[in-house]
Image 1 (cartoon, rainbow, N blue to C red):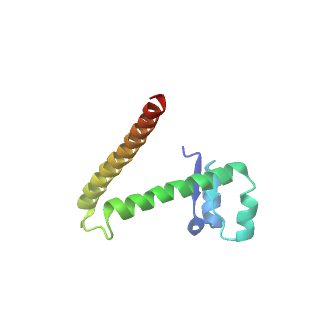
Image 2: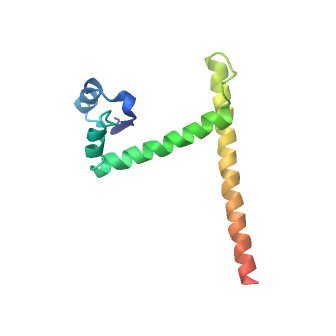
Image 3: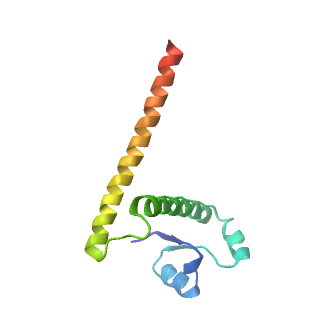
Length: 115
């Protein structure tokens, strides 16, 4: 069971909200009306969910633009799926390398301070 669904303004409409609520799913659809959005952001759960969505969208944009290329050159679902798989692997290795680089930098700083 999906506990909550959070989207951008493009998915906000009465039909979607009603459908989610009928299933007991939190409808975190970003309101199209700026006044309604301001009001919704007063709800801490909604605000936190929208912040999390924004972080995820940022990471997806980095992945899509930096690791898949624009436009994706692979044609057909199987080829695109393979390209996305290689992109995910490359992205994850990049993230791990960045973390290792940071850890090494911290270790070297500690060694310099100890000396």
